Length: 171
Image (cartoon, rainbow, N blue to C red; front, side):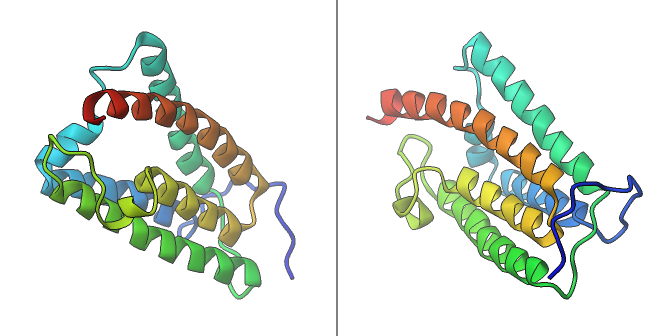
């Protein structure tokens, strides 16, 4: 079995990990374009405090760094790493899309509690993180794993703020 990579050669990988990473972003953008009202609700940060705005900006930068790292990573095709990571990515992508559909179908003044939201309070975040973990596994990259862990910690802090806001709005 091929080992985890601690180093990258910094050569662009045309068929590498950046493709599924960018695809996750594309799913978000397409969903927000199709379900405009839900998209507007999803990106409304008008209630953020200044520290939450800074945290959100940092979250965006780390997400960008994940994609930048992925530009240089090859998949470990024909290895157990690749197949396990691909399976996790596929399952997570399915949940990611389902979470956008549930979110979009729910009226704006109502808390989302249908579909995958019955299983998780934050299925968009959870499925995005687990899909990215699938990419980490499929590439066996320690650098991508480190960036994902940093991204998860920052995102968790935003989730806590969002949950407080939702509790105040929806009860």
